Image 1 (cartoon, rainbow, N blue to C red):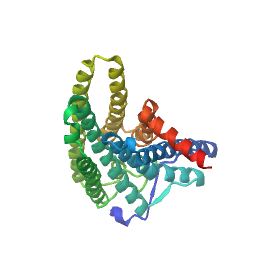
Image 2 (cartoon, one colour; image 1 turned 60 degrees about the vertical axis):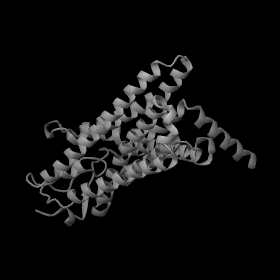
Image 3 (cartoon, rainbow, N blue to C red; image 1 turned 90 degrees about the horizontal axis):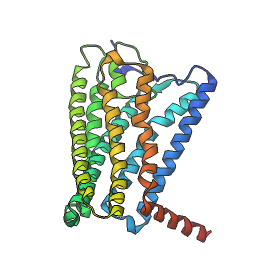
Image 4 (cartoon, rainbow, N blue to C red; image 1 turned 120 degrees about the vertical axis):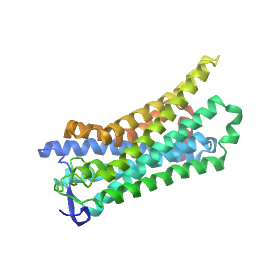
Length: 310
């Protein structure tokens, strides 16, 4: 009964049976990864360089883009490399690093989405108090709390998971290392401690999601009272994408981490993992900038200034 720390290598889920399908997997993930890198980098550059975007909403959006870059860079490059070189291996330190970074970034993103819901609630429902409740210091404190909470969660889950004795081999049924897949390799009476921690984390996650939904319930009530159709359209265009992203992120993540073993199918788990780990980082830049004229104007000014210097 080896301890997880005594494992020198773990085996990730094989991407495909044939070389052609492995190459297809590589090119598909490469396209998604490059789109996520480009989109999130553009948002970070636009918010950082345009003083008109130095507001709480865009400050939190910049933090979200940073987290999305980290999340997709933690999982996708290793999967692409394995497909390209026809291997499944990941070292023990690499697996532990993936678990730590992925847990940290996902937890921090959830808390940041909660903060962003609060930001939109104050902006629309209590506009006269917006400057007081969401001053620059308060924004920095809330963002720091999201990042710090993510680190605490990651340390707790990684230490618990990689202290477990393993008796089910070293094959991880996922394209990256994550807590539920490592738990499957542990002994039946040893993983209950980490399961209890996961349940507590799931309760916190559900609590954040309830707060987000209630916040948007209040927002939609306030928006429907706006007499201007243009005002209602602008409010809905900024809030509905955020709610959609949060719903996809939380629902798929909770189901993947808490579903009973009896409905554990590799294809289902792969689809769920892609939905909560790959799709949001790639789609967030598109969702948050597609109908955002301020982001578009900032990027247009940056591009114009760049080409004028050439």
